[in-house]
Picture (cartoon, rainbow, N blue to C red):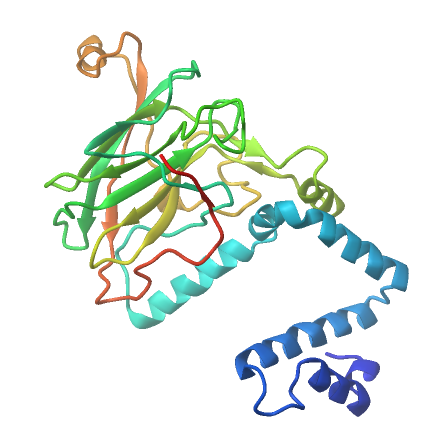
Length: 309
């Protein structure tokens, strides 16, 4: 409930003026009303918690310095997960069910990874982590294969670092696009990734420290899955057994996105993959929702790094 100061007619008229609501016909009504609500809520917060002028400017300075980590803020403060919650609620209200669950994208995608058909090797061989073979199919809700779907995959190395952002790695290391074959199949060879923490000494860590939270993510693998006639899928799978599996600072873990990780030590299976040592294996199918049933055929307009393969 707004305080007496915020609720009084003078402040309410001031908020209308700040948001441009006193200028009918100018600007965009939707933006005006959103600005009115956000600024009004912040006024109420300042008054309710008796935020001082010094505290206010400290917060502004902090946000200015935090700009390079806003992608982590969006995840760590729950905004990305809340957007997923809203989309899930809309699907439920519309009776849309059965597709692979969505979950957050995170801030570390890079456009332009090399594309191959059916199979790709993601790692460049520089990391001696355990080999991971992941495979499965892209299907529709009836279980029919979606041929020509693009499985865009990226993940961290065994130090929890991502190529491009970690300049010690080669371009597009642990990043590939795989086009599914006629049976909707995809497969890749990589390494088992590690989880990561927000940058030490950074603004995200500073904020999380102040609210008594950690900044760790469990090991995971990101995916965009797209195909003509289907809704764009943004998701990720977690590596089972990670200590932060159900304590992810970004709130991305979903039970249906924790596939079994099998350790393969059978010599025939090892040799069939062209390997000499045991490896880990994940089998996972992506189920797509048709565009006729739901909108969202394209990725969001979020800014993303773009490189040429």
